[in-house]
Amino acid sequence: MQKVPWGAWKKLHPDTLVLSYQGSRTIGYDTYGEYHKNEETGIFPARNIDARLGIKTNVIGIEVNGKHKAYPFYLFNKAAIITDEFQGLNLLVYRNKDTGTIHVYDRQVGEVVIDFEKNKSDATDSVTSTTWDLENGIGIKGDMMGKTLRPVNFLNVYWFVWADYFHDTEVFGN
Image (cartoon, rainbow, N blue to C red; front, side):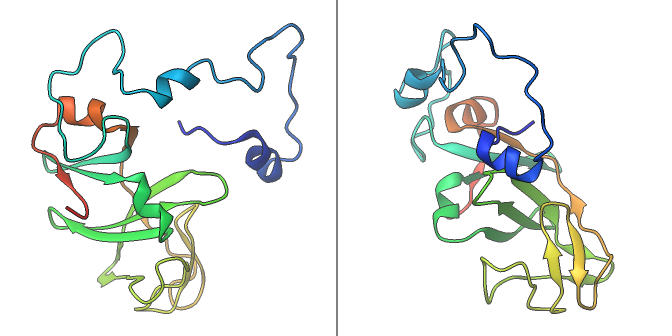
């Protein structure tokens, strides 16, 4: 599950109907607003505070072959696409700047490993010149049109949560 701003959702799904909001005082209000802004970890204290990132840094956490890696959200301030190799898996981590949704894929399609090194904000890979729909992981134009990228499971969590469970985590960019 991913949180998407209402405006972005409505743009993607213009026929969406809101059943009822009469009497609700939480519409347009984040009841956890103060929690997101402070350094408190909640009612259960974290056991493993890892100072490599700020406690409430949002990260994308992945597990491959029992090993763990985190990708801080701030990486997406410079590019929409991050490519990486971790535990023999060629990863593509993508964040949609309009909706905030995250997608993680295996970049290997058949025998080819696609790459985006030349332009990390464009969805056209530099190996096959295929343009990809990264929301759905499908080649939409070029040599790999109709091919799909295999999704990789991930979690979108605060750093303190991920680090508390996975002490041995590598952090991309560190």
